[in-house]
Image (cartoon, rainbow, N blue to C red):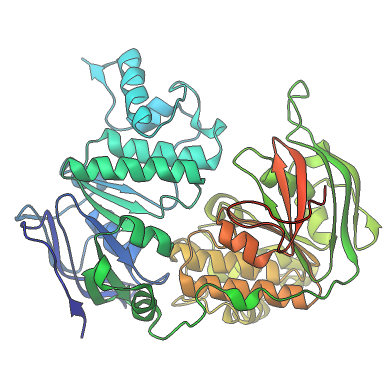
Amino acid sequence: MPQQVNPRKAPPLLEMTAIVKSFDGQRVLHGVDFDLCEGEVHILAGENGAGKSTLIKILGGIHRPDSGEIRIRGQQMEFRSPREAAGHGVAIIHQELSLVASISVADNVYLGRELSVYGWMRHGAQSAKCTGVLGRLGLQLDPRRMVGSFPISIQQMIEIAKALAHQAHILVMDEPTSALNELEVERLFACIAELKSHGCGIIYITHKLEEVYRIGDRITVLRDGVMVATAAATAMPAGSLIRYMVGRELADHGGKRWRRPSVRGPLLLSLDNVRVNASDRRRRPLVDGVSLNVHGGEIVGLAGLQGSGNSDLLWGLFGAYGRRTTGTISVCGRPYQPASPRKAIRHGIAMVTNDRQRTGLVLNLSVAANTTLAALPQVSPGGWLLAGREMQLAAESTRALDLRAASLRQSVATLSGGNQQKVVLAKWINTRPRVLLLDEPTRGVDIGAKQQIYELMGKWREAGHALILITSEMPELLMMSDCVLVMHRGRPTALFDRGEVTQEGRHGRRLS
């Protein structure tokens, strides 16, 4: 029986009652009730695949419920499109960005609601208005600049600005901080406080417990499409929240049991004065002068702010920049010159990118096809696809990650973000790599899935693989890494052993 604790006194801004939704005969929402008050941050919690995304897509007019009611300020609504939902003050900031990379910031922010007079665009007025909206988030950007030229963290903030520009009074934020640094998170939280003060109701989805209790007023938990608990945030401690989400106790939700001494194996990856040049040789290198040794059974963390060159280093090693990566590199004792991802895979290198939808998956292909995509020689000898072997390999690799999917033949686009991340990991498991480059491997996944990924990383480590880890979550970086290389503006600045650095600052011996 769900806990019902409702601290509100004012009538609800939003009511969703007995919402039912099925896809291909499989029910994913079982009569869910949810409400939101003015000036409230209501946390919508649950594991990946619990039904959170489906519920907010129904609110946003992307899906229509099989049954149930939506009321805004007491008036019954039936949204047939996102435009209709937006017209009634509903804005959704999805976990996966919906920006158009090839147009300007201002054009993205006002896309579909352009400022015009008699059909003529008012570019100057639109840019000025966009600058004001960006300023609320502490951003000083040229509104005429193409969105695709910005890093993903800035694109995330532009996505948020897009919702603010529409003056929504019901705002849904789905993992909005997944690509933000600490300063950007603080700006976002200040903006949320301002929105609350003006009566805006905010539905906030996050897997970060510290955020739940930092900004949440109320928490509702979904599990397997059922609302299992709702309570004031102060009445639902972290242990209870996790138990409601996963249906069992997780005594070690911090993952500390994976922080154990490594058994250093042979040298698997050696970098000497590695540089990744920009496409324009007149600009400074993306990465400059990195020297690093990574042994089997070792996880090396990369720390640094946005633009530090961490991701560029991994992309360069994976061959995504072609021969713009220079220096002396060896993999498993053999000389290696990055040239293409195909060559990297042949040399036993795998890379989990920080944007699963754009660079990790082919969304219109099935789960099975994505899972075996990087290991085609195993399932298509002589160029002929063996469907049975493909399904077997996909089943073996996804079973280890507890993938929640109705079928391995369903489109990967229909999965939740966390389950999509599991497919990305399964894909690289099938290549049997020796060196793993992990860029935000736990981005947007729930607590239970994080534990599974930590356990997988631990198994890779114990099996003698070499791992390089990038994560924006500092506790995760310090917990999982055997040593941490700090980068700034493309250059290495310091290397610390485990125990010599904390989240607040470094302690002990500086290595370089």
